[in-house]
Length: 109
View 1 (cartoon, one colour):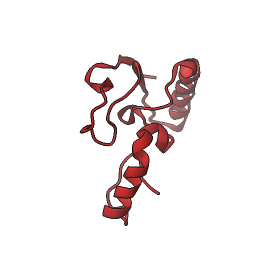
View 2: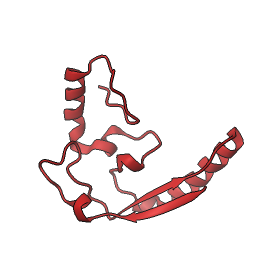
View 3: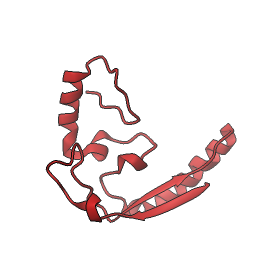
């Protein structure tokens, strides 16, 4: 693992605002982010093993929601978008039925 961060949240990010978009706020005290360099399959396996160990230690403190900007691994849509998930699927189905617009966290029905 190259770097690990524990960022304190709150402030503007913690305020729920009606005009806030898909995620109107984020109810958590901190966010954890880690990164590693994986130029080979062996290095990738070592980084993922280290991340798994760190996440298992943090598990008791992890929120049921995750911050999409800090999420590299596949996650449950409800954890990423909460109550906004159903609306995002509706908008995506209406305006992009052929899935032309894509993201790291796909909005698929």
